[in-house]
Length: 218
View 1 (cartoon, one colour):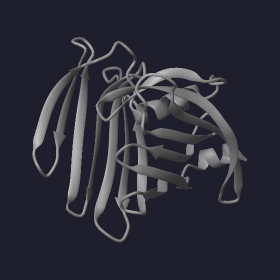
View 2 (cartoon, rainbow, N blue to C red):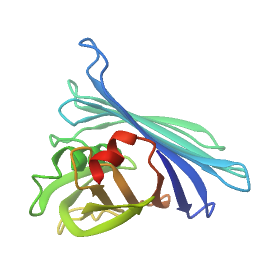
View 3 (cartoon, one colour):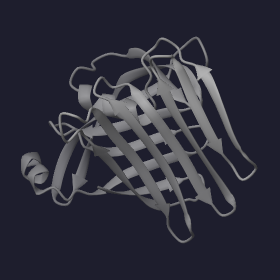
């Protein structure tokens, strides 16, 4: 899938969202990544996550490069010892730290979007949960949003809306997510808006290459 994206820095780019599922019985992890490359000048923004089949985040990574600015951070979660290991690199210096993990189910932004895709038909009212972002855990709500209709080529496709917002009480999450998913079994994201402390992304689906989806959508 190809996307058009708008970023705080830079202002435009083309991105790709990929989700890879286990290919055999020995593989139990789902991998999701969002890579945005800039237009006009050299730069990129990347967000990756690895989750188990139960929907818990096992690893999350994000980074960017724009001009002389760059940053990357990887967090791996040890669910046995309940410790999160964070490795961060900046132009100044690398750093490592370990922090205790809370007992809650851990989901980062991409894992949360995957959860919405998997459970779209079941989410009829707000669900209180938590989200992991920038080394901290925040109470949030997963809740339905207004539905929309998108046009892909000559086909109009209905899409269900969902959002992830800060929940009252506790640590305030400085982010937010809105996503519209095709109202069919594939739950293809037609638009995703992500706000985080580091960057804001507005992504719109540019094209669909799957002929089977277009046939099913008519």
